[in-house]
Length: 304
Image (cartoon, rainbow, N blue to C red; front, side, top):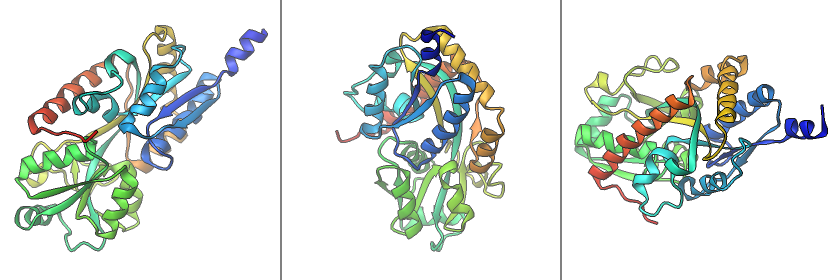
């Protein structure tokens, strides 16, 4: 191999994510990075760039060289929610990024702390309608906040929204009883549910979760239209060659078949979503329209 070829083979790929270490996005990034290193034959480095509701990470990637060596690992929020939430967003998901590959989706689940007197979703709804509840979210405009909005619309409940800076503090205060409940990613809450620190009451999806088969959906308890699916995917800067995007997508599809990624899915409850860049682009377009309509209709705003 020539010197130039060797340098190219060893050039590192950066996976930039807008979340701190330790959360569900970070764990997904790390298992994905390990498999992509094998598939691409290149080192893959995780860069945690939290802050600005995704803007810091997004800007870093948008301004990077479009050579396929810098990728944005984003949740649905920074791509499909922020454009409607922030009137002066400093990046444009549609213009700045090209969808590369959907990675995984995680439905949301309503949980309460282990010490909470409530044990079922029906009891929770009764309390929410009568005396009201305090519900945590990962922040204004996040998927957990969207779940709260849908819950309020479906039940006419009295809900005080308590936004936190991410899932870890929201989870901690739910366990501690400082708030009455939290709608969050199953992948980030499953360990605490299994450890008995949280009680799972209802799944915000059309079907039950394979990792929580005894927990009903909101539909099953007569609460319609509470569907919150938080997906994660890879994006490249606009201008990245199509052949590079297709090569990374193909590497992701191969990685899904690895024993490590299958074990990760089983242990967290996420679902890996196979598909082409074009199919991922359609998902982004559809979800952007869906969540922007809800944000506009409910007048949801964020303090900047």
